[in-house]
Image (cartoon, rainbow, N blue to C red):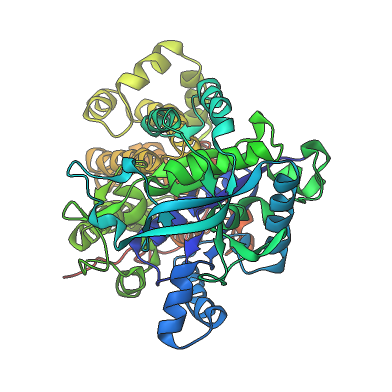
Length: 561
């Protein structure tokens, strides 16, 4: 059965419009999905909208429209933003979908019949904002419930409960057996500690008397299911899961082909308890084997001056405004390059401008422009690089050279100073071999969900090429007819490096990658198509002798402030 990388994001709650955190999570997932497509792997990328709940019902009433009308408008705002940011998803989840409702009700009915859901009466303090009962664990040192819970009232209510606590030991064992289930590692440790604190069971319903905007319980039409069995289940309902099929191995080929290499990107605020505890236990309860548990890639927050963005503080950043002002590629690059996956970062519009101007306009854009300009002015019509390619092959098999490269990474001062001591063609050959080492770093970083490190691998190549131009000075070499072969080798290496860079930036800057290929006059028959790029082609020496490139056009015009 062909395997698919199933990339999902947390679906967006449609109680309010999108903000910078939504944009980051989707661009992160899109970058990872595009990377796997670049490797030639089949990908199914799902995102969407969580449309039920009491807050939505209240917001719709306040706006004077029905809940379905309200969520339709907000959902479209999310779709429009992701289209603007060139987020290329394969499936769109909406929790009001009949397909989703069928799966959710099938799961609930099955668990109820198996005795894993029961009815009970609960009394206690209830957070109106968070729509949940609170326990003494939520009290602060002063014995009071903090402001994060909003209005808290005492309430007595009958509801349905899922036997969460009986799966506690299973989850603890799973986390010990699968140390990379949660990425990054420190989030895995946080979850292990949280599992030890599991005490009671999980309330999974709300009476219709106070909430009717939700999926009705199939065994009691006086209640709707709360967010856990509704929103969380989207990951399997839109992958083709059939709740009527109890044996996991008997699910459809479509579902099993998708649900085998699963990566879910989520924010750190919904790891515990929602995804790390509730979701994994839900999957276990309906018969998913341990090896079918998804990997959770947990990202941090974009803050403002160290404080979490919030409507109450008035520091929400609108990604639509940024994309309109600076362009989608500038926003994508900043969001991916300026935050370490898993950690928080401070948002800065000035920093966005600086990263774009320094990394893209001044470095990569300048490299493209000066290389094509020099090629048009200096390069002879014919070139034979057989000797250079042969030397690259010899050097790539020299273990003494290979062992030095991790200590002299491409782009570093150590590599640059060492390369300067070599004859021109040997220095180019060394760069070609070093690129292979850099490609491993890129591939490893992308594979573990850290595209910020992959960006640095690309920048190292760009930095080295620019320093190589300054050091080799092609404009001086061109004046000496005896150095024609040396000139050809310099220009070839620079153009070939740009071809490789375009392939590597494709997941992060999809349109810029096409722009570089267009100017290199490379694979023009596939212009604008995904098939134009493949990581298999990221091998130095693929550009044929005598290839004619195009004229330079500013790809990253500077942002002037």
